[in-house]
Length: 104
Image 1: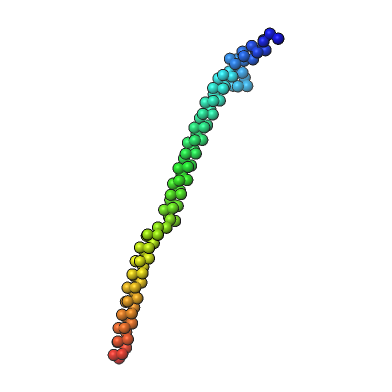
Image 2 (image 1 turned 45 degrees about the horizontal axis):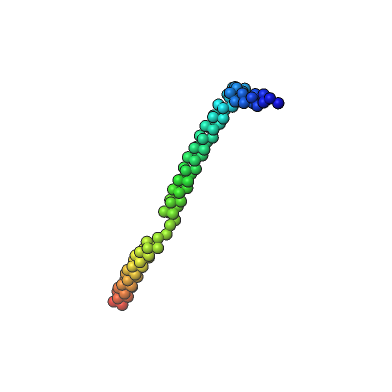
């Protein structure tokens, strides 16, 4: 053993290989690393986009379905006052009708 096999394998590093689109191992490795970087960058961009989209959709859902106790209390007080005023109008109308009927 004189190391010729090791030298032959080492020489393949700079030899164009048909199975690698006539690229050397070094060129193919460089291309492969570049592709992995691009794929990782694209995946990160997509993940960021979908995370932002999910956050926006969740915020929109909360704005539509969220309940504010303070706002509901204010609305309840308004409705109570309107109901009370309507009840007074009905009561006064009833009294007026009784008076008119008694006059007849």
